[in-house]
Image (cartoon, rainbow, N blue to C red; front, side, top):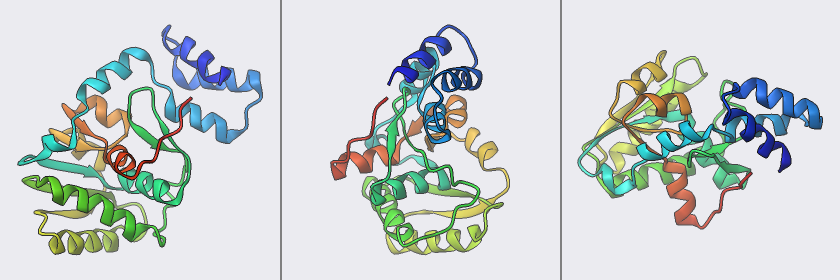
Length: 208
């Protein structure tokens, strides 16, 4: 995609990503959906390399405490299960492009996606798992309760809760499951649960 190459050229020379995407998208007259993909996928090479160095394999969680960026992980896994577009970011992390975070609603894919996530975590046996959900999103409390019940059914230690300051709490953790670039930049280790599920299911992410 020529537009992606042009944006990479600019961000790797120090230009802000938002303005670079806007400039290139206007030049090629890209629709809003494609602009959003560029924002989600493209990362300056220096930042991408730093994030890749923080990525840890699933097996590294054994006996460790893990904090999960609830909606970030859940929505991406739901997108995988629904066959929707999921891209491999320049930093090596998978990202969906649904743009539905604040308007998220549970669907028929929610329980299967949670099962995939929690089965994976139960298999690797971390010391504790804490799933954090944004309190501002409707039904987060009910979803947290569902997650706690599913964790208990798998003997997975930890909990789930809806809080106002998810990003703040995640950035204070040592190991976090997320594809949120701002969070990855702040922590020591990051796990891409969606990428692991995609690999196990033989799903290849899209590339730009």
